[in-house]
Length: 427
Ligand code: AMP
Ligand code: GLY
Image 1: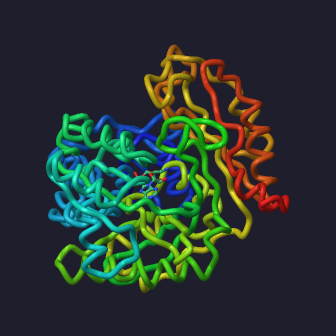
Image 2 (image 1 turned 90 degrees about the vertical axis):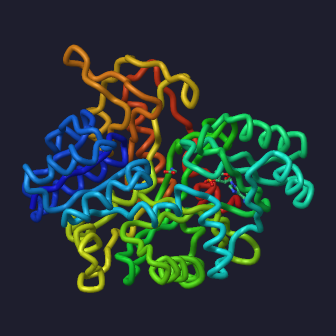
């Protein structure tokens, strides 16, 4: 089968690496791809916003499966355009992708289906937002409704901070994405991510992970797309994962199907493990980046078989995903300046040396310039290793980071710290 993978980040490098290993994969195409993806796929310049161009490509190359990596094309309805012409697509429809595309949509769905999440109010102007803030009191969470590249959420510890976040949103800081907002109850606990595959009726658990969103060591500084992750996340025990399946995922999938928006693809849950059990913070309609990298490193099943079954609504007819029972941990090497304006063009050397010790280096924002690998984005490399414990995977990942010569780059030095402390018996 010929496969088309859309995207160009570290997540898509991991997907390409794993898809290409499958005996079911004939030619793997990637659009636009990156230099790491190009080791496994033929990269083509296709614009995912041009649905007609993507369709024409799929027809010409006889594509049997399209895997959509990032959220933007899903929220934009690319999966619908392709499915309408009979193609098998991994990724939800535009209607179902509202789970990520509109925070208000998700909160209303949770309310209808009695899914545990923080209390909330949807607001469409500054005055209503300020009134809602008074109701909740600080700490409180303010969210632009639409896609805001991970920057639309403010966790305000004080009222002045909360009021500033509201003014920012309604002054147009997030454009259309901030035409509406959600004011939300602050939830206390440890965060964990959980992933499940569904074809709209069958649901199978995939894996858990824990991400590190802040740019600095000790979880300090501004939020980023994620500076590192590990999988599984032992804090999300089998019991808690089971609770997330029955109380959150199952009613979500059922409600969407009942309301004529069946969800097919991967569901990515951001969970807060509160004293009252897991509560939903947010849904994403795609694999996490960099969570995907650590999950796929441990995946023993054939990824093409899984994603194709999902795309053809026959997930119940295949074996559920199997994973190795060790841990994988990834450290993001970013370009200085990230998450603001990253320095572009810095040289990168030593990837082969880093991989010689058993690590796997996924490319995110890289490019080839004059025959040499250079930085070309905020998050640049995902240095990923496996171990019997988080502590061991962390040690191996940082040994590999230290083998890479990337003078204009930086990374956090404490990825996995919560679990490393627990393993040492300090927490
Ligand atoms: P989101 O973009 O929804 O993932 O939010 C970004 C981050 O804000 C989350 O990873 C949490 O750390 C935090 N956050 C979002 N909603 C809440 C909430 N209701 N209570 C506490 N923290 C939250
Ligand atoms: N790493 C968080 C995300 O992919 O949204």
